[in-house]
Image 1 (cartoon, rainbow, N blue to C red):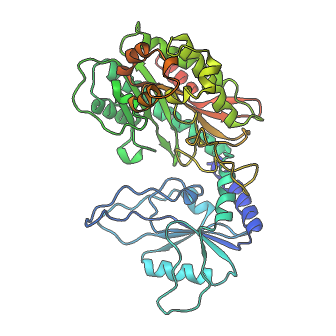
Image 2: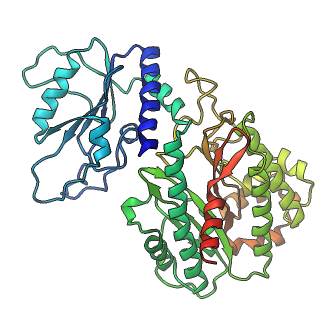
Image 3: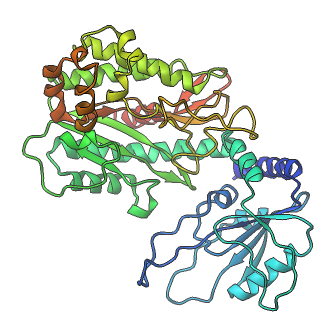
Length: 448
């Protein structure tokens, strides 16, 4: 846990800088809580406020409050009710060593203590869904500013630069997910249904549904044309043609996000299309280094995909024309990737050279989640795709570019749905580290 201690020191320094820049004396971070479904006594799985999780590993600390004050040891106001209905979360010793932990078994006591601490500051901020409410006496305590934009933007900007501890967590999240990916491919080859493939993934990666950083995308055949396909068909498919899986894992709250696509028949044109996209994806990853702009990587991937469309006879024009006339947008309608960390789509992707302004994606590519310069310490995904989406193809068929498409070739690929290949990339001072490919290679080597 030496890495964790160093991580906390980095956080303390970064947050103190943010507070100095925005004029706050204290920050209260609420852990959050899980509210019951409408007219029900059951609640969805709890997920920590990511600003809270940046300090405290992924624990069920509902209703707790973290207090950050420059020069002081971080204070954890821990809510631990006397409860015989549920098992209490075990608190690691490292938390007691690195935080001033104060326990409260009643929410009223916690609220009063928080308000008393708040009263000592001239200006404080509260980050989270829950604000700090005045007590029942109606006293005129100063109110914390709820999620002030300038402070939030500064903290989001900092989140892009991962500590050594965070990078280690992301590596372990990749390794866990790769175990599931191996099992999922095996189940697909054995003829399993989407539901059975999903269960195989959970078992091998040792996760339950609530552990996942996002809902697994397990798509056979045409289902792969739905970018965020969310169902798990329980019946086995008689004619297996293709399989796309987008699935990750979490370690200490940090996420991996990995996608692979497979063809049922290795001799098919679709298998060759997968191989071609995989080669271009590797080529783009090989370009990653500090000093680039992520938007430029996105545009370069469009040109690489245009090359593939020409190579496979999907378009009747050259690659430059396919890009300039926006034909590639039909086959690759999403961004090439996003920041990765405590959240699958981690924050700060549109912030400019500082936290003071945003650099929104251009009108042509509204789905691009990341427009920042590439810098050492960032972790993001590279996930190009080639899809045959009926809705988008129909629009293209009705456009002025229709004559530039070989519709007979397109029709041959429609039953396969689409392809996406996604790796998690750490930017280093020298270039990059591919967390995903390294995890696949390590598991392959261990299996002999």
